Image (cartoon, rainbow, N blue to C red; front, side, top):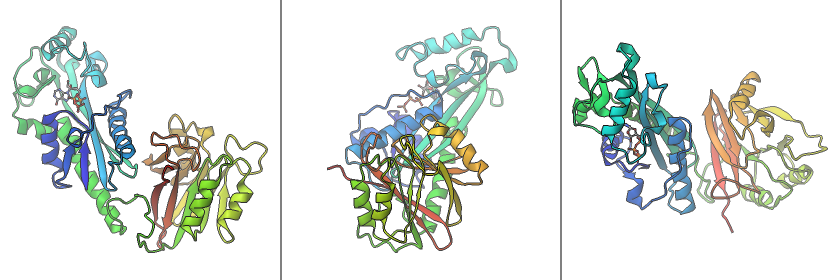
Amino acid sequence: MRIIFATHNKNKMKEIRQILGDVTEDIVAKSELGIDFEPVETGKTFAENAELKASGIRSYMLAHGMLEDDDIIMSDDSGLCVNYMLGMPGIYSARYLGEDTSYDIKNARIIHELRFAEGEERAAHFACSICAVFADGRVFHTEGKFEGLIAKEPKGTNGFGYDPILYLPEYGKTSAELTAEEKNSMSHRGKALRAMRELLKRVIGEDREKGINSGAFSEKKEGSGLVRPFQTALIVSDSHRKDDNLKDVLKRLGMIDYLIHLGDSEGTEHMIKQYAGDGVECYFVQGNNDFFTELPREQVITLGKHKCFLTHGHYYGVGMDLTQLTEEARARGCDIAMFGHTHRPYLREINGVTCINPGSISYPRQSDRRPSYMVVDVSEEGELTYHQVYLKLH
Ligand code: ITT
């Protein structure tokens, strides 16, 4: 297993290697792999920016054939949030007063902004959000905070950036007066990294318990000798009357138990059922392009131990965010929500609901533009294992 960290900051790499060293020794900065791609940070939160960086690098690696099955791409976003300044500079910490402005000037300006603030009014914290994106697309986040007060004057020469103005009353020092070890043991990044270390150990442990290696959701390789699970479901979406890929996939997979189509089959559902063959339980839902159809708008089905809410997703604004979708799934007693519509593969747990989008089997829109589908294996105990599969581009 390899961790690729999306940073230019050498100090960060040292801390990352120290803290994540017992997850894997193979930890590299993206530049060490020759990746000079810089995802644009357009997010509104630290977490969004961290995810944009990590998933951007994953897409880049995928498109350049550099991604290995058990790679984990990681990134962080951090900054100083000053209460009196309504959380500023926050996600703009590096760009505050201009990227090239010295920290002496930035720090002096913040102290000036707080000239009328006293005591607790001077509260501020460093925040750090770390995001890990697995090669298979799973996304995990952790956070850490480092709280203090804005000092009345800058002090200390250790650290970097805003360290000289974050005063820690219980130590009587600023962050820039701490040794590197002292700071790492209590800093926002240290906390978020340690939380990520524990999270990764748990996830990787669970994957192993399920009898799968760390590429748990990786592509199913033909002839990989996988033992046939108790039941298998093929999940597809957005075929839009172009069914050749779906036909090939059904042929390749051989025996399946369920076929789930999450909308926009555009009238070819009878053909698709025929391709799937007798004995396959087929579930279809309406998409926003399924006009004059008798397909149900949504369905709730059971897979193993789990209840799944099937919907195309356009009524829940899935292109924007998944809050409405997860609320609806929970209201219907489902712990899994399967949707389509965006033409982008997705697999992530939100508010206790596993949200799944297999992407489009015919018209993919994610950056590498590979048509995709998902295979869900159901074990005898009713547990599910997900395999996001991509077709090769011809
Ligand atoms: P990468 O994006 O390449 O990782 P960066 O240094 O720009 O490097 P961030 O975007 O995470 O890292 O940090 C944004 C800014 O927040 C950073 O430039 C500092 O001004 C401030 N900052 C973050 N952590 C800090 C810390 O521990 N001490 C002082 N300032 C910090």
